[in-house]
Length: 368
Image (cartoon, rainbow, N blue to C red):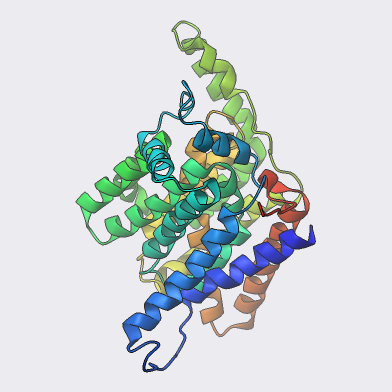
């Protein structure tokens, strides 16, 4: 277990290096200009992170499934449970080149983390955003549901392009994410969300909704599903009806169950100041987060629907990073206390996930 703590906290430190402002002076013969320094600052820690995660052994609930897919591609029906053509193509290409599985996994990790850094490069508070990438458990989800985790990180890039009005790049990146996990196609509804931007002017309604969904979400879900199942029973999709009532292996409890609504309430209590500070630049991101929060509180633990929830709620790591950056930029002591309390909660959550082997993340073992 000690190795797991060393690895996961070292990964945080390594991941922060590319977003830190390091004032290194050009050194003749080693680095000649700022551009070279920036590349070293990005790629050296990125490669180290990729290797540390790539050379793991048995870490992640689905680790052995992904290893089987890679090592036994020549067997019939190996990819029968993996319909996504993009992920399949990457796996087959890396296998065709002859890369050992740990090296191939490292390459996938490089793609994933490079996508993250590319996607957040225009955000303020990047140090906090990267921190919450870990503290919210996104890394542990990636180690388990690698295909959808990879798709999510591509969607981070897609959102950044949409915010810059590069619509075609947005569509192309959503298409790439779709090739890694089919649920990503739902991200095409993002351009419709600004039509509901007016809801952000009513934080009381938002907070009340979060409280109602926190308490009665499962009841609401039950009524909705009963209606859906009744309809599905009369079609050839009847077998999927039971999956709506099936739950994920890890439904969350204790601090994890309380943290999501509490975090959302803290964010939206400060909604007015947050929006003004960032000049309403991140309203779309807030709408994505709000959508994901309400969905998660309603049917986040459904085996079938959790993949849809994951698509939206996962953007919380960016929202939380921006939120802490906003709080600490304010000179009032109460804002700082709130920020430190928020950080304390999530550091506790991160430690708890490691101790409780969240998504098979611990104990940590290397393959050598």
